[in-house]
Every structure is written in structure tokens, then in C-alpha cells.
Length: 134
Image (cartoon, rainbow, N blue to C red; front, side):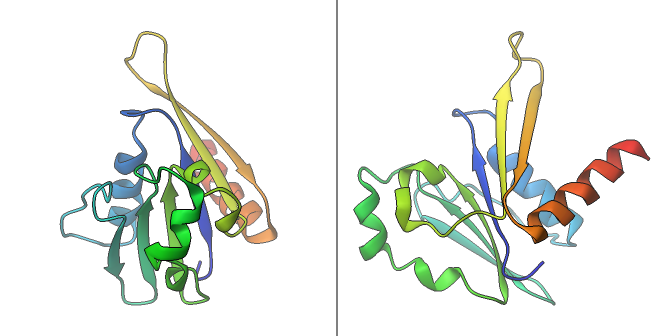
């Protein structure tokens, strides 16, 4: 929902950008979806909200947040999915939903761990879980 922040953690190749691509497809985005590793942010204007895919992998220090100009993305009419949130440190607003992806030992699958940190995050997590029960 608008105003939501979802963080995505996991090693390189764990599937963070693939997960974002799936979210965008579910919202009706038909265009390309690429990793924002070098651009820092990829905006996706959808009919009902702004969707920002942000990647802090290249941050060498959390204080880079102050000069990156990304704080404008975190607003009430936007959803932000953030890769490598730990690289932004305490500058990043609190996440509503924290997702962590891990490669399975045989590297033939992924494990997703999700933690809700707000009421809207709990509702989102409940909706995700309901899809698996159906």
C-alpha cells in the first residue's frame, strides 16, 4: 500500500531483484525491470502509486544517504522496496516489512524469511501467507 517500506536482504544472487520484478508484474507492470545497483533507484510509476526499487549495495558508508537525494522517495504516495538496507544504516526509515532471501545449500532454490514491523506490514504478511494456504 502507499507509504510502505519493504527491505530486501540477502547475498548476491539470492533473488532480491527477481522478487521485485515479481511484485511489479503482480501490480501490472509490463516493462523492463532492472537492478538499480548502479543507478541507486529505479522508479516505476503505476496508476495508483509510485513504486521505487532502491539498491544501497554501492554505499561504502551510511552517510552517503545524505548526498544521494533518495529521502524524497520515502513518502505517503510511494512504495519503496530496498535492497541492501544495512548499507544505509540508521538513515533509512523503519521498514514495514523486512524480507530476507537465502540460497538453499544445493543452490537450487531460495528460502524467504519475512518479519512485519508495523500494522501495514502485518496485513501484507497475512496476505502473502494466505496465498500459500490457498
